[in-house]
Amino acid sequence: MRRTAERARLHRRTIPPRRDPQGRMATVSELIVVTGPPGAGKSTVARVLAGGFERSALVVGDEFFRFLDQGSIPPWQPEAHEQNTVVVQAAAAAAGRLSSLCTVVYDGVVGPWLLPTFLAATGLPRLHFVVLLPSIERCIAGVRTRIGHEFTDLAATRHMHEQFAQARIDPRHLIADPPDGAEAVAESLRRRVANGSLAYDGRS
Image (cartoon, one colour):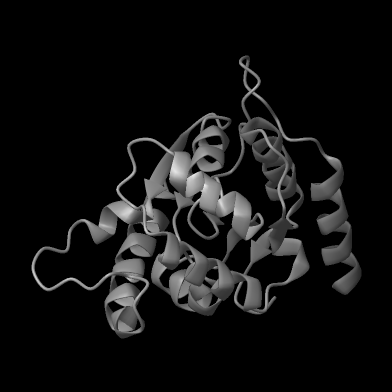
């Protein structure tokens, strides 16, 4: 049984992913979480990544926080933990449901400390998870220069960067100091999704 499973795993890794006539990956639907602190470039990478699949959906986690009206707490505040958990669970449930239709790329702040909760809320047996973690200087520059984004709090950026930097993250899920150019990062992620190296099932 173990040898059979190992052969199947190697077989999946050696077959290149099928692509459509436009060069986009035509794969079994998956859920891919692209996360990191503000200014890490995750939204740009997630958008490019989603565009590389034959059928895909881009779920932006920040949009779920906009559903909150009166009495909402800034998500980076310690007292926002319960609020953040509920909102992330709602976003995860939506992403998980969409993955029955197409490949879903989730763009949002999902710290490793929330990952088990996120996975459970999706209703899926596994997902793919990657943390983009540039230097704090690059993140600050990213927050300062991006256009059309409501979040501009540099102190909160530093705080969230520190949370990710201090978190225990399996190296296979971490891209520290990602290269410039979202296309190159997205293409690397597509390959890693295809070979299963970003997979997270709650045990690994």
